[in-house]
Amino acid sequence: MKQSKLSTSLFSGVFAVLIGVSGSALAQTGEHAQHGTTTSGAAAGAQQHEMAGHEMMQTMQEMHQKMSAMQMTGDPDHNFAMMMRAHHQAGVDMANAEIKNGKDAQMVKAAKKVVADQTKDIKKLDQWMEKHKASGK
Image 1 (cartoon, helix red, strand yellow):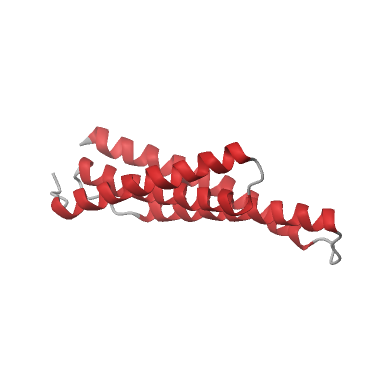
Image 2: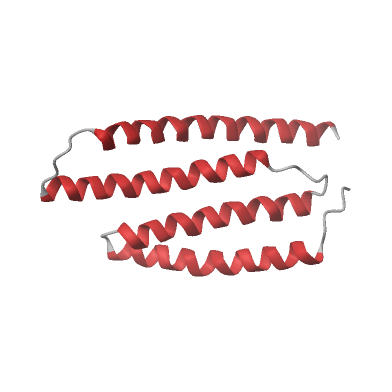
């Protein structure tokens, strides 16, 4: 039991740090997006790339907030499935942002693979959680 509390505390601490870093980066991106009201073609392209980065950072921040707020069930298998589902969904969301905004064919191809693979994993995790309700043990 002591190990479980230590692991939960450590896990919470790591996510708190990550949320802080993500929040700072997100705030910084928001500040930069507001500079300058006229956009040339190059500036518009840069702004689009910045917005894509903002979208990915927002996805990460939402994932960290959701995972940090999850109530641990006392069932490590269920906790793992629940948290991995949220993690994989964030991966799908980030990959979709890459597919929408990415310019490098290799990265877009990799993002499409992430969407396909992690969507399958999410379905498996959902099916497992439906069949195995948290036992609290």
